[in-house]
Image (cartoon, rainbow, N blue to C red; front, side, top):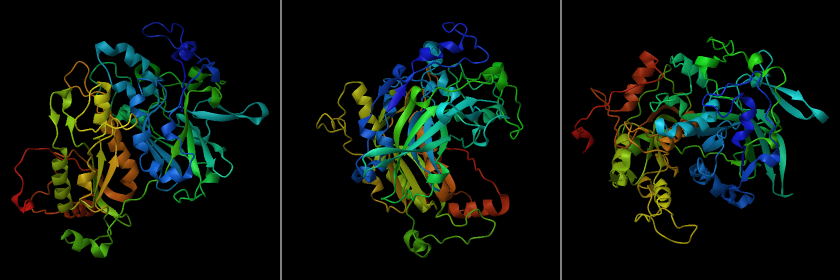
Length: 515
């Protein structure tokens, strides 16, 4: 379920809430929201109370999340626009991949919309929080300075409430609450890149690192002993409650870094929040509730003794200076693609996606990639035609529920290759804006950016190196190199680099690769 807070709940924050640039009151007043003020939206397709359906649901979470409802029926600027969530590979936290909805439409014709969605930018900005006891020892949360904050509350933005399904008793059992963490401090990155603010107001929004939002919800320590990857393990449910504060315009309001970062700390939390800003009770707050948490199957691999016979390529000698130790893969690639799609500006339809992908997979396996992850966006076309109230000839009609079911996705291509080499992930989320970059309202390829972030979080722990590219882009070993493993061995042994960046150029194919 999604519980939406009315935008009027923030009026108490401002001296003149209806003005173009309202002045924020200091210290920040409390929000007086109550549970009866919230709008509840249910998404029954995400209900997995039947344990027999767990496995099938866990294989398709990105297809079940109400991604394309966000911004239409889901109108709450502080809810994260979630595209994927799953159990981390070490089973200690839940990884969440979201997108910045504010970037979808911009420019002079969308100023009101950009203003409404400013809360999305606030989700990238950490706050400090301290736990306090309320009435009857009820747990409450207070906005604080870094000096007062709990150790796990120095840089957070969401309260994570965990539950589990007790199928024997047919009830939900409360497990505990934790505070979210970030993989890195987005505000600090923005400052290091010499950006004056995280709130870009023009159509030229160049801070692409503020497009995908990644954060983690740690599982309470006392419940990490469950083997959550087993079929008989408890089924976790997660509530995500955003901590709502006005967005910090850094050029005006300052930066909020703790001393461990070394950057400026010009945002005075005590001045802004005071000493008694208690957050509303969780059930009185807008939130995501009962999101299903599933584990991911680790990628299949080929045993080292079978490697040469499968690829006809000798495995390079390992060396102690290389990054590779016991990870199953040395080099993998991620791509977001479709059997058919519209080019930017929707001026031309590309329908040869399957033949392109088949060549792309075959080439990169030959060039030394161990595994390829295909995020299949073919299903997004069903949504595009539904919104236009048109029938897509590439989709078959059936019952109302299956009316826009995809007729032929990319599985016919990926199934040509062994599971140990290619993994297909059904990813039907539409991009929120397909305009050309020079348009007054430039495009935002939200689905692609989320897929790339999800691939890093899903499969990064299983490989030393990961590449992201389109299926019309080929990583070709140049010079005397014939295999990417050779190149990476040299890089790890002699250069110690962590990131490789390449120049793109149009070129004729290598005939030796076409034999």
